[in-house]
Image (cartoon, rainbow, N blue to C red; front, side):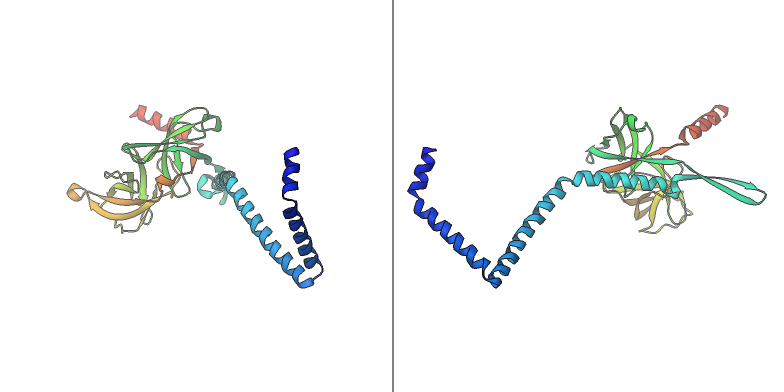
Length: 277
């Protein structure tokens, strides 16, 4: 306290000068309408700019929550798509009675670990068996096919990415529905896949879309990529095609795990068929 008093006493002339200057400025602004309006306008610009910066900073801090909310909303909308439903149709006295049942359910997950520079790449997400995820089900993102779940714990799941030397999924040309299967390119390029064993009766074009066939873990029509070049297999029996992948695996943030509610029924029936063969 004593040091403060000494400081004020030492510089009292300066403090008096500041007080008089501020008082004079306030009186000048208050009793002159033009200066008053100019001061208010300038102060509004300053405070407005400050509030804008504060708002941007708050928005940045809440970006993760906003992304989570958008991903959940996308999952909810996907659950309502016609491709997620199964049409149970009965013909009664020439009256078609169609009942749509939920076949595919989408569970959103946030990517917490990901690799793209290895021969066998995996993705870890923050959802597990507690949220209804099981081993062997398909995974997509907003851009297209991602892979399949291979390991599950209570709260986490590991996905075998399409960028894995053992990954292959049923796929087809979007235009003429010719079936093949998609796998990672031999070049191990994270942006390039290979569509194999398409019938040589197909007439594919560079730039044509490649989508899921509906014969495996995914609903029909999920984007995979576009044809970037054409090849022929030995003997010309089938066609292989380079595919520019729709998903940028280096930038994955959110994925959707696809739960097929009829999968157990289908698997059980197919297992019974194999026993009879």
